[in-house]
Image (tube, rainbow, N blue to C red; front, side, top):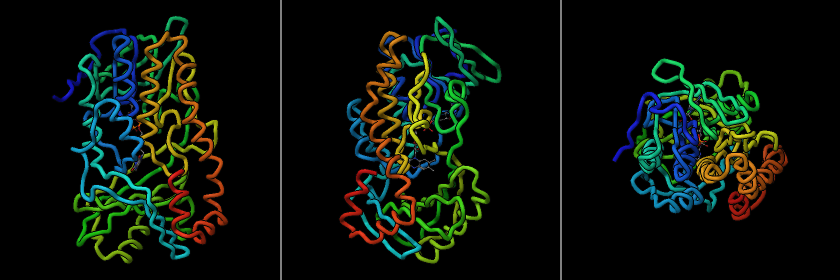
Length: 364
Ligand SMILES: Cc1cc2nc3c(=O)[nH]c(=O)nc-3n(C[C@H](O)[C@H](O)[C@H](O)COP(=O)(O)OP(=O)(O)OC[C@H]3O[C@@H](n4cnc5c(N)ncnc54)[C@H](O)[C@@H]3O)c2cc1C
């Protein structure tokens, strides 16, 4: 049964307020619910639409299985796709063994939302404007039904993504990657690969592009560093080159812009401050090398929700302890990122045999 969604909070105080109803926020709310009243707010109307390739890593499925959740209803054709590295500069194509389930992201998010217990109060559209902390707890300033409203709570979990207002309140603003993603008509079949494309010819600021077939269409996305000029023109040139290389690609039927956390150093990864915990992209939890973020959002959301069941003054320390292995993984990826982006790293990826590239890709 779909979860009931209100337009203003029913109470003026909760034990936990979770900001953002993406995978991090939903898992956090689900876990925190056992300790007392939880309010989950989202700035968008729910169910929401998130621009995404919909590649689901096995780690995500493992977290969901712990909560009795299966992604089956969200899976689309081709069901499984393998990662393939394409370097247009050198004309190299390296298929890898790393494989993902291929989902409709809207269906996937809805499946998560519907897993919430009815005890979690969900209010949307209801952006959190800011968060303040004092000796007794937190105040969250919300915009509910066109009016400002304040709610009190013992703990806040900021799971509001790459442009997090909660993170801004405790640590200042961050600049995200800018993304563009087209839904493209298909005139014929595409191979079942998640293509990751690197090319220095696209333009300054272009990080990479991707292509994945989904349900009779293809998604073509491009990721740009913060401050990139004319990303749309650059994305068009990726599409033009792809159409020239793959005859099956037709016209674009939709385009959407979005953002992804720009995680370049240990300082970009932040578990929180005081009684505010950050989960998912709000805390910089995603793979800095591959951009895979769903498994990080689910794992950190789950851990934040668990920490929220403890004494609020001890929650942040418990959360940090729980996240140590995941933070170590992110730091490892951050250490290899400059080499990956360098000319030497790219030359190495070209020169190494496909099985070696395939093995390395599993850790990225
Ligand atoms: C184009 C693109 C393609 C991607 N492809 C993949 C992929 O194939 N596989 C993968 O694993 N990852 C992918 N990612 C990354 C993945 O989508 C994210 O890492 C993941 O969704 C992060 O989850 P989250 O819960 O932290 O944040 P989000 O999913 O971003 O959710 C944050 C929520 O917070 C809400 N919000 C924002 N501000 C406020 C506010 N002030 N108040 C209240 N609510 C607010 C938003 O409306 C949103 O619903 C992609 C990202 C992009 C942009």
